[in-house]
Length: 139
Image (cartoon, rainbow, N blue to C red):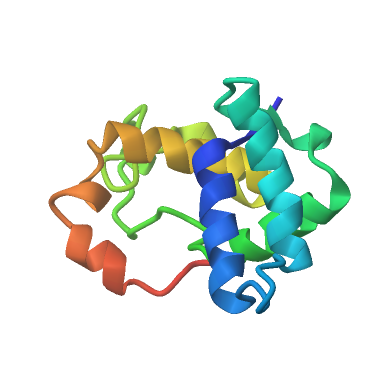
């Protein structure tokens, strides 16, 4: 099961708030409202994530629009899995994650992004962080 993490829901809300600010009467735009409902449900239930298939269609579409604005892959073109490492020193993904990346769903990719970001041991997050910022997104 892939899940959407509350931090990604929040990032998507902020993405939409910047693109479609609340109206003069403080009404939220439809994508922001849809995501806010999911966010509120997570907060009220003290949950950190929600199954991607339990997210209402409007909220999922809004989340996917935000997702499309993020880098697709953590790759910084320094791959050590091809030399036999279990985890890539460059991006922090496993060999299977690197190999099957293009077949993964957006929620699955975000779970991997979250794990490697929290670990922050890959060169992408330290030794070559500036390179990762300048690298064009891979598709």
